[in-house]
Image 1 (cartoon, helix red, strand yellow):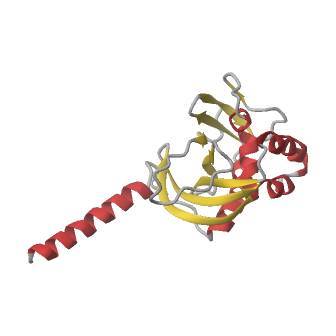
Image 2 (image 1 turned 90 degrees about the vertical axis):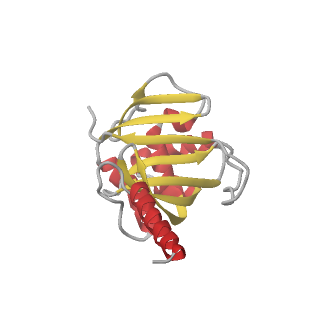
Image 3 (image 1 turned 135 degrees about the horizontal axis):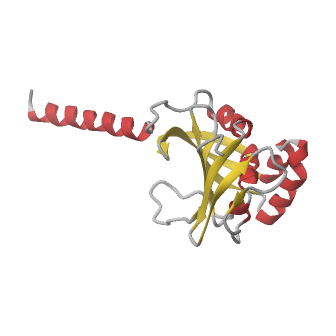
Length: 199
């Protein structure tokens, strides 16, 4: 085998290995199946159906952890509240994803050991309020007013059971999604869900 052929073969094997690591977490279950918009549309209900989960929410200058009971009428229990409404009410972050449009798959990634697919989308806040179940709609409408932006880009990571594992929102809502080669490093609010059915 010539040196050029060996280099090509080696690069191909390295690429396969890299993709395998990034697409699979420790649970090795893969990610969700279906068209991107269908997966993202279904994710909020499937997340809520899980009952309870632990969450960790963070921003550059704030962090909150606790347990969220998706069926409870009150905000999730956790440590002290933060200045960011998205970190203080992780259930509303789930409902916010109901407004996601133009979802596109970005590829596989592991989130806290779980295999997921990442999806890029744009949230229409009015649609999020309209799609939220009636018993939560008033709460979601108040949450939308606190956010104060009609639309912004969002990234979501969905596991093989269709549940949201991570939701990432730009701190600056009016900013456009950075281009692939952009030198701008945006700041994000991130909410992770894990240990579903947590006690």
